[in-house]
Image (cartoon, rainbow, N blue to C red; front, side, top):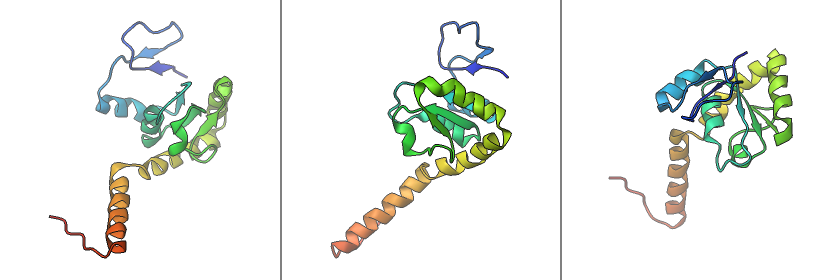
Amino acid sequence: LSLEVFGETKPAPAVVDVHHGWCTQKEVAQIMSGIDVFAEPSDYQGFGLPLAEAMACGCAGVSTQCGGINTYATHEQDALIVPHDDLLEGVSRVIDDAELRKRLQAAGPEAIAKIAWPEIGRQWKAYLENLVRENGQELTLG
């Protein structure tokens, strides 16, 4: 078990095993790809990009109920979403329950694929084509 953090430049607390500091997107993906469980401890997230990145990389995600996470994650299906005071319990559960951890790890990338830019682009294209048809016009892309 190792506690790893990134994103801060000031020294990490003594409980942290590895402090990566600021990272590029590629470095974040490399770090995330080697992690089994990712904890999102925020009080508030507008969208929750850190958890989304972790899930896309196959981490079992555990998040506090902090806002935008519900846009892409479903409790017990592809992540654990717990009250803030229950974060440690949620993380411990995923560490101790190998079947749950593997299920969340497998479900995460699929959940995130539903909100990836190619999928969002496909949905917008379909929406705009339908809107144009409903108004009796033709859509020409050029």
